[in-house]
Length: 577
Image 1 (tube, rainbow, N blue to C red):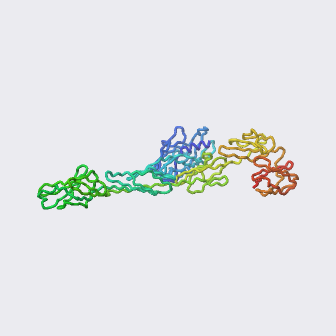
Image 2: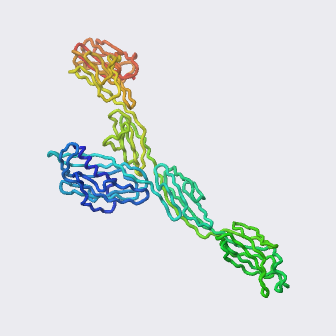
Image 3: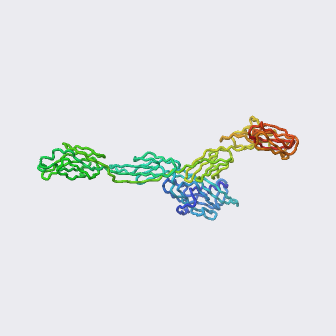
């Protein structure tokens, strides 16, 4: 009932939280209740957040004093609930409860509490939040007290970043690698608009919409855009020859042409009229700047007369492009125009993006202990055969059961990575049931093959074997996760009692070619050497309580020694180098 009760309580604590944060203060909604009388939370689900956008959500939870465990039907009183710590929040978010010490007393009438989740999440993703809770309940007059850890999910959707000059999709942060797409928003058409991008990673662009930009190294980057709007401007006009339409009237008898020009835009509006240059058949004008932002443009030349009417000297089209262009106004009027670019507006904007480092998930291995020492790692989810191990969220783990072990680690930036697997094959120790005359191991493996005196026994492929016959029993097991392991040898004897009276000592251990022994004087003593499969590899008879045995014929490995003298028996383990 204890675990079921805790699951009820933890269900209402499915909040992404970090203690001692500075979110706005909340007020519980006293209308938050549940029809079945069980703890509940309002709203039932937290809305998803969006990366780069401020998030704030107020939550109320209902904690009745009396609850009924839905599995067992047992009634219990919730005395105290304490949230001791919370890890795994998205980077940039915090969580504040309305109780300063994060403790609630339903049994004393404190049946509502609230919390505020707030901040600006930086990284998109689904976050595993580990919540540590201490619960004190009373059932049948007994206190039930337990600490547990639970994992919950919180979704942060991808966001968009933008300013007056450009929009950016992707970012503003990612783990390991970040790809963004940028688009300039200012288009000064028909004026000339140019773009200069600098992405802070060595890449630049002059396109309005650069292709995907990838940041593949951890660090902070500044993306900047300079948008420049420029106009084509007419800055000079010169005439190299005039047609003869200006001569023949009284104003021109004794002088050359008095010439001026008028510039017209695409709507036929006169947008500029030049000064008149007197008595010059090859006039030129400069020192002005007329924006050409409504093409096409035409230029008309005229001879200014005082007495008679003005003489039209021809009309030509102006080429609107940077540089010097030649025109022909007709009937012999020729010249050239000079067009340049003039900046009218400049805009500068920038955005910052960040690539956080992916943690190194490689663990240290010492004997059967896996561990991490990186101080930047904050969350550890240990798994065996791909399944999280209940309660194992610390930086180290002792492998107890066989399996493929791995760990998902998360660093202080919220970036996660999963380690490779470590195969751990457990030591198999058969047990002897003297009453049933049976040798057995746990029935949790994929296959079994029993051995008797070092030889496989046909048909003995279950978790136990009949051991009514004295001898050496061992079993080879295989597992679904890749282990094939030979067990220790169990020696079954009949009528021989285990005794320490022989008191034989052996040294050195490990040894190679010689084994010294010393013990009590029991006369004739037999020493049998068995390998791990139970096979008899060597047998010696000694008549002296001390001496030396030749072990050079034994290959390297672990051996079980059976020492007998009459009804006395002793066992020992020996390692040959």
